[in-house]
Image (cartoon, each protein chain N blue to C red):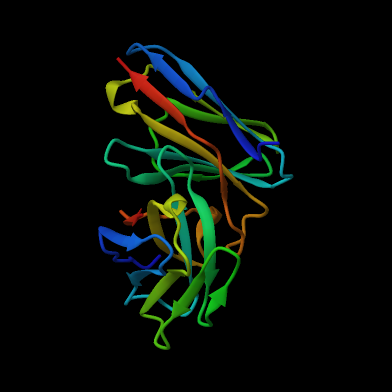
Length: 112
Length: 114
């Protein structure tokens, strides 16, 4: 599975959009981009995933560049409860057993 | 109505002891996982089971033995506990082994070995 690079930490004002970048320059055509988050002292939580088209659900939007080498997770109106570590994961369709490979993630702090 | 539950939530024990962590999912999923999160917060896959069959064993020491009595349960037994086993252990499940499926994580079990 391709490696991902994320900023270590980011701040965001409550009510504003949080834009979390992820670089995955070695991604291949059979790899999807997944986002999970982990709120302090809880288990990771799935947010969204995509292949090449932009995706949106009730939690967030995922914007993938045309060359697929990077993506951005957008939380449109961040709240204090969105403070968490956000993980960008690239996962192959040939991934044995469906395992997730977590990196260090981005620690997002939403401030009042 | 917890989807993925783990017991106990906290476990404190002495080196050399044997302990078990239980995991249950009520989502009807086929695949279950164990992950370990160490003190540096890195999450790593340990095991994956699909329909009670072991799919992944990520070079985990054989002191760790997962057991899946049925599709809804994946327990983790650890023999001869060592200091380095101290971590938070997360159980997860997903509908199928395939890649399109999100994984649902339990709340974690914090294991402290003294």
